[in-house]
Every structure is written in C-alpha cells, then in structure tokens.
Image (tube, rainbow, N blue to C red; front, side):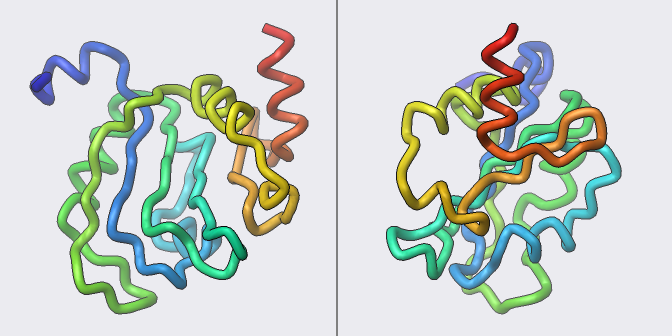
Length: 141
C-alpha cells in the first residue's frame, strides 16, 4: 500500500466517499460539504431506476491539499441529514483528476445519465457545466 505522504506527492485530488445513505442526493451532499471553490467535480451515481444512490460518490478537488483536508475532516464521520448505519469511508479514488473522471464517465455513458439528477456536478471557472459541455472542453485539450 502507498502511504498517505506518498499519495500526497503523487497529486491525488479525487476521493471516493463510501457509506452515503441511499436517499441522499447530490444537492444534499453539496449542502453538507459546502463548496467554496474547493472541488470541480462531484458525482453520486444513481441506481438503475434513478430513485436512490449507490452509496458512494467521487469528488475531485482543485488541489491535493484540499482533497487531504476533506479526507481528514470527513473520514469516519456521519452526514447529518439522514441516519446512516456506518460512518463515511473516505479514500483516494483509482481514477484521478477532473479529466480522468470525465473520461471514465464517457466510457460508461448510459441513458440514465441524461436525467439531470443523474449527472455529475461539474464546475469550471466558477460556471456549472453540463456533462456534454465538460466533455467538449476536455476533448479540446
């Protein structure tokens, strides 16, 4: 296993948050971890019918420091809006960075993603982007 200090040096900016209550929405999650420009991507995958989440989310932060600070603040803590049996488990994700996460979603694109509540929250230069807009921006690099 790679140590926390070593991960920090590798530019780890994306975390995976596990044990999110199934009825949580992305909006509820954002309201708990207020974004003051610290993250540019938040994705809470939904079930096949879109009614519940899959109990995990991916958040990409704009810097390693902010990702580490979030991990330290939320790991083993509980969200406040709904009761959960387990505390959150926050770890660094396998896929890293805004572009990496967008490309991962592009590979897995499903009809469910067309629904607004199933799309990730993407913020670039202070502007909210749709998934298609973000793919267009990333494709130009």
